Image 1 (cartoon, rainbow over the protein chains, first blue to last red):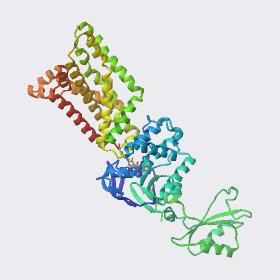
Image 2 (image 1 turned 180 degrees about the horizontal axis):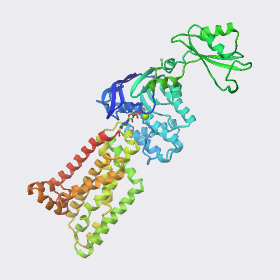
Image 3 (image 1 turned 60 degrees about the vertical axis):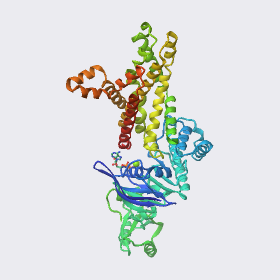
Image 4 (image 1 turned 45 degrees about the vertical axis):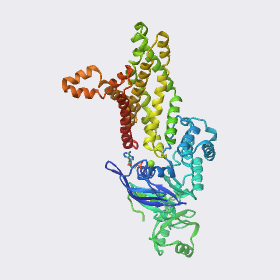
Length: 324
Length: 244
Ligand SMILES: Nc1ncnc2c1ncn2[C@@H]1O[C@H](COP(=O)(O)OP(=O)(O)O)[C@@H](O)[C@H]1O
Ligand SMILES: [Mg+2]
């Protein structure tokens, strides 16, 4: 388990990380979400013992980051932001170096390195100098270095940064496949990534934790969570709006001017009205809306209940606005 | 020990994998022999001694050693690999000492390649091999002291050029402490005992002993302490600067 207790780090007057506490257990993939400058990297640097905390501490597998840094490092695989590596070395030599420091020698060391090069698809560039590699390959070298010793704890700082969509997908699959028996923290500012791979997300803004929960929990904080989206044909949208707002549990209805250029007025025959209906806090309105539409005999083209928008939650939480 | 070895090997290999290493060795050999033959007029002295060869070493090291050592930490900090290094299970001491010894051995190899000079004097006459051995030892220790100073300044800046300039200035100061003009200058302001003890810290004074064939244990202790002190200071600086 990784246990972080009141961890803080100040740079002069900047509180880069301000009294953060959380635990991550085995089998969890924790997404560290936040805008640039939120303090994600600084937190990771402290957990990996690179940076000393101003106050607070953390422990990794029972070893304290301040008292037993070497034991902590031995347990962690770390991919620093923008995956630095010795540019003048070739991939094989670099991984052999990391393997030596990780305590492997003789044929075991060679086997390890060969195996990890296979896992990370690095065989074709094994003897190529690292500074001649593309960003995607360099990232994989960083991964290979982090996974080399099959660590129980993985800390990945923006692991998909700078990769193309296919490579991103590859990396996400790799992380997901490892997540079951490891304890992983990854940072990102890409929201789909959290939804795609993480079992849990912590949103951090200006050095503080502003939300902590599963991606679904976080989406539930969205105003749109539980909202009903309707597309109705041949109705007067103004009338629809006013009548929908009278339905029990409805907070407000909103007209959506999606790609419907010719019909801003709405309500004309042959036109589609798009409406989103927001529930009052904690209310579920799907049933009520459905029966109301049936009762009114409106021609329904589409009906969907929204899960909520992580983007909106993220925006509100980290801009200091209020999500619910 | 394993980590020391890994870091030492990586560093030494990276020297020999870059063309700069060979340029350095060639410049070192050309400069030492050039100064010996053309400035000190080695042949015209008609003496089977390497003194005109060793007398140049402090002045050549002054620029060449900082050139070898400037990248040691600057480069790690600039490229961010320092974050990688110090999140691997490596202690600060292992990393410092591993890198230092790799660079020192590299300079040592360059120094070793001046052995044709020994063959030359052996051919010309019958030199005192004791003095030659002591001089080589002194030269190697002096290079180590310069290198330790360079390591320290290399940790202070991400910019190799700045590291180089700072190192040259610091090495120059350490050298000049014992040179006549400087001691005379000090004598004008300080009592003799003080200026003497300042010059007792000079690289130059201690280097000269070896050139006379003297392997003085105090001089050995001096160079080893200087190296140890500089590396300790290096650790402090690096701890503060590594994450910037
Ligand atoms: N070495 C440093 N010196 C001064 N300020 C720093 C340093 N490292 C980070 N910061 C500041 O700390 C804050 C958090 O940075 P960081 O943890 O890198 O954010 P993130 O990874 O979430 O983008 C930023 O305001 C950044 O400018
Ligand atoms: Mg970052």
